Length: 367
Ligand code: OSB
Ligand code: MG
Image (cartoon, rainbow, N blue to C red):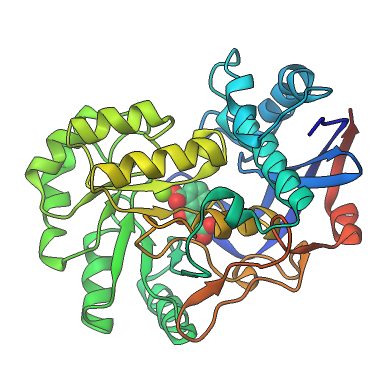
């Protein structure tokens, strides 16, 4: 495929409910959508950067800058035999994985659409439904948190993840266990602790959590290895895993027993496949993370999560938990058994509603 056009949009959508992590509370999402055209076919990708550099160093504005100034010139007019060639073609650009991923993933959608096959097949997916879990943000009260969990369990979600931070951790987990018993439960600290908190984190052990996600700093590997020796809850890394190489180091150092894969964080689908395969070779289970994506990014995630080593339920939930309406129609929904169907149509396999994209657009550029 020879890509002849790149369209970039900055969009905003209000969240159905605010989402609070250890680093911020958001009420609406700001994100980029990339469209690539080749031979009359279009492919779409979503950038998971945010307005602020609190989850990662990238923001929508840095992604806009990197895509227009550095990625577009390397992609436009270039003949790619396969989308796996896109990420290596961007090697001269250090970092900026979210910007790269948005374009690379659009190329995968384009490729699969050209071939008339679902993206999951092009990626090497092996299942037609994925297991779905929910990520529940920090609430104003524990009562409110219990209400949210009750609702999501009733909807059928296969596991619950709650966000934690110092002061919203042990009491919250204890309350969840007291109220709901031994449900599949995990926690995500988004880097809110240091090794000095090891004793507090060890007090989570008796609650038999599936995992504790990114307890320590966003760029740390070795402190996590030290922490893992002091706690029995399996450590799962999210923020720290920027590249396949860092994952290899983290596994070697025994800094984690589980890895969360987000294609935006590692540079797209190809890097995610390599990360997935590396983990499989080392017996490290993976699950698919979420970044409050619209239906476009969410559909990409569903296809990727159909690969075999995604053996734990992901943070890929129904559209209506996030956006009403979503950018796609029909929206993504879960079945009563807590699974989501992998779309069967060509590419990401969802219908993108142009008018909704237009309505949500703040900025627009065609190259
Ligand atoms: O750490 O997994 C995270 C959302 C934004 C930024 C970081 C994270 C998250 C989530 C939400 O946990 C997952 C989702 O429901 O999309
Ligand atoms: Mg996380």
